Length: 336
Image (cartoon, rainbow, N blue to C red; front, top):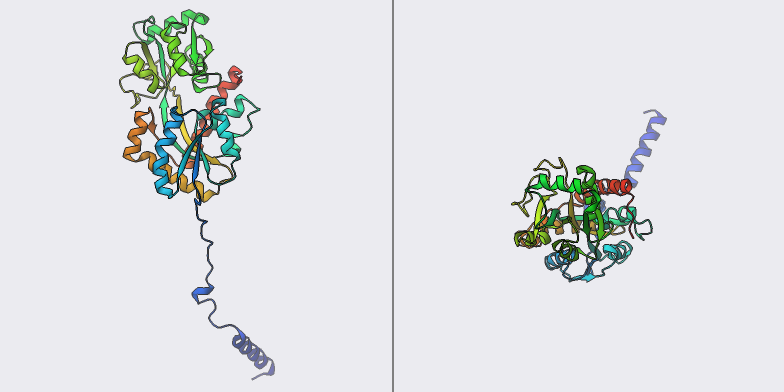
């Protein structure tokens, strides 16, 4: 055997002898993934930006008990009303304890910053979508003695009235306000905006004849319509809404083709919340919302259950921000 070849073979054998045998084959040497951190480790807080008994408050309390059972920790609803829900939304955005989430409405998660640049949080950057819980169209309503034998006749009267008619909303920048401005552009009506502290005051003003129309949540409007105190003109859904199937939509009536406007309520977390926690909450809350018992409760509160993934809510936020943001820019709407 040539000396050079022999030397190479000896070196190879020596290297083999020095190597630690079968390290790669032992289970202890296999790579391990870090286990997910235990969560929650303390009570979970749901922030609501509206008073007790409000629609977002009822939604939060409806999901709190089953969520507590699923997580094995208390789930506490805390009300911090003010600024159309933005005070609570800001608290959620800035929460650093990883145990605070919020139940919010459209405006808190879409157009808050567009309406008022001084809003202390950015819905897109500072909030993490969890799940779209429930949606509802709005109902275009008028006083019971409003003119017109049908919706088409009523719109003729509204166009003829111009700015002599007025419409009420629970405030500047609400979906009812922005939605009515959008409806004005699509139907060539021109009523003047009159803001009120809340929808109960809007309803009273309409019943009393101080205003001629409003876009109201069906959960609030339908009782007054059925009692003969208000007149339903149409619903802002595509086709009939399961919430109020007896009333046609404006789209169905041919007044506004393709026009859809909804209010909604959703769960969100701080953007700093770990992704695995957000994913877990998204799956749990969506499952809870779609469960028969909770679905029935939410339906009675005036919500059609969505129960989406975080990605589904993110898409809805994007679409609604574009739609409502376009109206804000076109009409020059600014929060007061």
